[in-house]
Length: 414
Image (cartoon, rainbow, N blue to C red; front, side, top):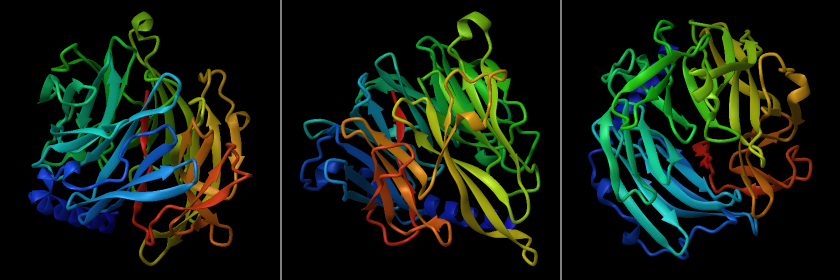
């Protein structure tokens, strides 16, 4: 783990150093585009080379082709948030670029009719957006910041500021804190944010925070039990529900990997979030290592799960290779601790893995990883499109990357 940490620390320093360059003044209008308009048959993703560049990609489900829209240098850490309308069709996108701890994030808003706006003063290391009362709310990982703007990001409703009374704040090293905010959920009245907690200190836990109306301070907080390093969050079903993946990385703190469902839809009646453990598994040598959460089904009631196994190297004392052992859809509808039956809720999938996005206009799924059936690893640059969840009718597609640079599929908000 120390070697891994050193690697990521070096990458972090590179990104920080490059964050001061003039790219922060770059706008989409500086380039000519052939149809930037956001249309229902499109989906967007990024290809990141950390400390070097980020490519904004567009996939057209009408002809199953991908294209490069733009290359942004020096951030190397970008993501896309897709805003869906009430009919579950793509409405708008937010292209998010994260820089160093010294720089705010930049958000580019694109919608239909080639319209776009930019805001370069979102929270540092922006990790999540949510659509709340016809506005956009965002939270940042490094400094525990929050912001609320108009949908197009141009009108400031609540200015960017640090949230008060977060637990275990550590703004110098956010990865060892409980203030590293990474997710948002709400019930149309109350806003909640969720932190990751520490990656190497089991006493610094992930928390659920209820914020006051102005997002200035914490009203209530709840520690997520039996959860260490809640590193992945996905909103499911509606904006009041969140899946949290705990302890996904190899380390010496815990060998238990858990997945929880957080539900605040009934908060006004019971005054506490409902937290249900939906998956749990023990990490073993030369066997299971971690879960991946890949995305949502068409009805948003199921999440795509990948299970990864590792080959343990006795000499280095590290897992040196990972393979895909199982991929399946896990149904979350009416999930309670009493009704939970893991196997009955699974739909197993072969041939594909990684991340997934559903396009309602085309009624198709796009998977980021087409598996090599011999090695059980992803084929470089190749994904798959399917009309069914089980991907039995898949077609191979080119995602336009010739290396193992990180393909980051969009986050969906609704």
